[in-house]
Image: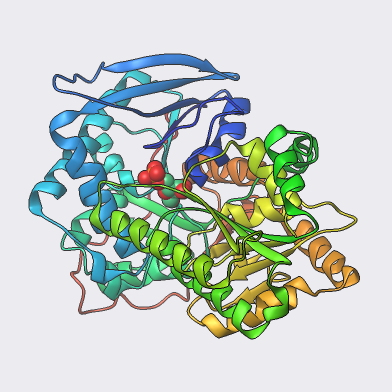
Length: 498
Ligand code: F6P
């Protein structure tokens, strides 16, 4: 099988470049090894694009990276518009922030259709396509329209919300019906997968049984594939990074102070305002911690052209200035706030230098920072992870200190517990989390999805799937009324294309 991986953002194999975003950083090591072609946006736009407008095709490990210039007329409506002002807030259950226009939706569809035409260059009888994330919900349907019969997989890195929330996007029906062009649709958590199944049943009137759903496209499987990290690779990177100049400077600056660390894109889903408030509260309830603890918050600017994001950036700057002004001393800054990105190597070293990792999103698909923080720890003296129960990672990392990111007082109290946790308990929790991380690495995730994608074209039952894949178990039930009924199409797997 010749695998083609498609995502909006891609990563390049330069360990010292700042990384934006979990998806690209997570995929890089596995795509490199797999020999796949990774297709994505070049980050540039052009007026006269053609389907052959690949800016660059360069080698990437055993495979290749193919970067595409996107159509200038539609890029804004696609990326800042529909993808990040309608879908992103909806997928993170922030219906209050949904901004949508017909023009933006049109642009989203145009860019998806454009990508579909561009992908034809890599369409061979032996090709299978694996499409990533909410930027390309309708790409599979566009590819089918162009006659592609090859296996098409899709993985959603964000949460999938409840049906009433996604219904806040006016084009929800169109989007989900298009998604059924994918043979395999993967989610981060059981909750996401169940929400999707419920949508199919109630809004589209489709029957979902054993994770299988039939539509006019054929049969799609929906299943859960929690994304992981390269645990041992990241741990080794963290150990090596101790001697990196930036990491040494950080350690030298501490003068015996303990460090908590947060690393996030500036995004309202990340719970940054509540996190800073929790530290504010911590210094109120435990003034003895002043001068002995600080938070290093790396807040990488993101999607700055969107009002909700630029407003948040302003709000955070004001809030940090206020907290530092009230609690700070001439020789101590409670919140070290950095508006920039760092390379994976430097971040790995920073995580290892911090006694507490603070990952408190309001809602997150997985959150790989949580996993990276754990993997980076010194096994003899590991730090403590304080983790939102609303991050997908909380399903596996239940040995972290789990918090409700809306409960400022509760978070402040938990931070105090984390800072005073004895080493035996820290080691016990860390070992439990490492066991989970090792059971679900990025390598397992990648291989598990590909195996399941191949299996969708053979008449295998769920029992033949690899153990990392957990097909959704839904009770079989009658087709629900209320949603729009479709002509029933029976399960007839499409033949494997050579
Ligand atoms: O699924 C969400 C995601 O793709 C993450 O993997 C990544 O953190 C983020 O979105 C990147 O967003 P952008 O490409 O807009 O910076």
